[in-house]
Length: 465
Ligand SMILES: Cc1ncc(COP(=O)(O)O)c(C=O)c1O
Image (cartoon, rainbow, N blue to C red):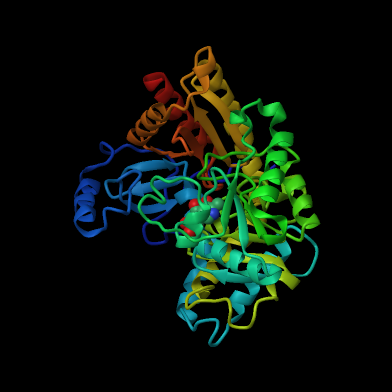
């Protein structure tokens, strides 16, 4: 069993100048405090209104499971900057690798004069991702860019153009990935026309499957097969792109066996299976990658977020024959695989291994599930609890008896979220209907802190439900 990392005291190693970040919630002012409010006024005057803010507290330092704002508030982090700081913010190995790299050199462009760090990250990805066959990787800057490149590679390899995606999917905000993303507001509204040759099929969403969760796996697979056959044509389909657990769509976990059947069907038809593990990857779900839970080996896998402990890095990893099918110079970009981001990734991966963060994610799952189930027993507005590892969510509904009891309750999700924020716990919502509260704590957060955050969540339900 791994130890709860930071209950023992402040996080050591990082923050040498300011000292370790104290691992407790401190409300020094109202949230947001006066300094944050002043900064927010500057933000409104300087930053495009299109760039939203979930909680306008301005962060000065972070570490373990705590964000410290400019007013001295210590907030419990249940979001990890949307599943990024899995190893914790400024994790010591990441800080030290980055410092060394910054002093050595900051950029050459890998396509001009390459460097070892990029190659080392690709080697690590090829080893760690599912499947024993020969693999290759290519590095990029953002998750969206990784998904775009997976599509490019799949099209070249197969000579086909159609891409199949799912209801509730989120794959990014570039033109192609917006087309692949399901939800209109706020991601797509007014930004069209979108890229073509993207086809959407229903997702296996057990809680909302029309004939009941017990029929979801079989029926969702049948609908998938039938729609791709009749509306797209297997012979035209380059890839099926799926999040093994959907992220922004509301942490939707497909029923056991569903992914496996999709993978087998893809193989039968020469279609590539692309697992978008940008949110689920790197220990988040209790395995290195969520596909492993189902024993599925995708042809290509996209990663980002947790890969580099907070620095921008993304990757496509997959079968060597697929990855090598692209003509020389067809993949790349000025910054893709920046040496500082690569150094950070090597530090983050080392941390995950040294601290058994997959094991820690499973411990967090057990702790959260106990608390969330107890909460659901008290409040029937919690319609569903789902997720895996340290990627868990509750879906809020109107509750009570009758047919409308599963009606999405976005207003309550908003109210609970706002209450948590006001009490110094950074929670995030998700879901096509805006009625899901998701939990993505850093795996460096200690049990005591997690319990305290969950106490606040419980108070939020008592106050708002
Ligand atoms: C599953 C998934 N794919 C792609 C993306 C896009 O990544 P980025 O925001 O780095 O472009 C995200 C971001 O939330 C994601 O969760």
